[in-house]
Length: 340
Image 1 (spheres, one colour):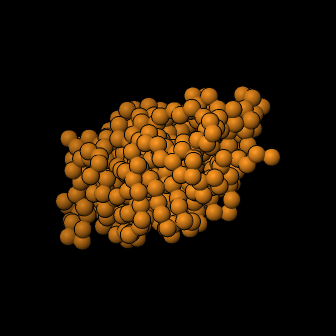
Image 2: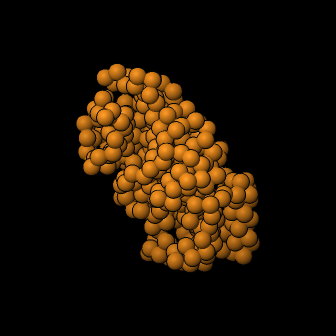
Image 3: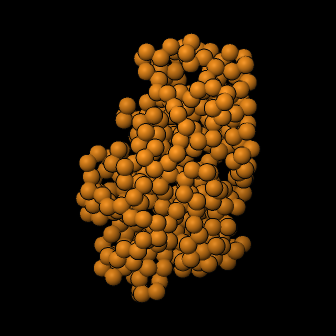
């Protein structure tokens, strides 16, 4: 029986012919990394390959590593296997990985979204025979509103809070979501202040991405100075001693999980904005269709439900595989936060 081009083993997604892993979750000799989130770019690999714009991001997070940067659509060959990176649209510098050998093409999406957020490189459909896709929000219940409408609501919320003499605190994970929020906040309303984890990552991102001016909150920053302005902070800052100094304040979270009212209540958030860096149901289906693929492998998310729908309703050869990638959650920030 023919060996699949990519297989899932105890270390990650493996291309045996090239002896290369993609987003390995255990230390390996050579690993192609799709993006900078901690569940996809882990410490301990001997050699990293990633997009050029992602190099400073993972070096900031992982320290001194051996890493090679590649441009979009640049083909590089390892043991006769052709690889190339293509925009995933998930966060800044996030990639899909195209793998080709003897005319057979596989694509691994990593995490992705199809909406142009005005900051991350826009998702690029890539033709393939087998498509390995995340399905974090792989249920019909998940349908995102256009980003312009969400940010209109966020900026109106900030303006209302300011008129009432309260500080706005907006939570979003430090890499990706935070920069997307910063990009679209209306600075005519007031100043943008940042938690250290957000500021540190944003400073790294500024080398390749245009972002508004922000002010880091330090021990010398007074409550009076911040009053009426907005703070962008990671979710793990909620309920901490750090946040208490900004009373009176109003909190909000920007996440796909805010689709469910219970999620906001469980997190004790005053306001929830539905804003995800992952594809919604229609985004997932349109991405799959655009590849022209015959086989689909669903990884993290609502894998069983999503694969069953693809098989029974759309006729794809679809199955699931277990990985150690996480869904959109504050867990990512818990791993990043030690940067402060």
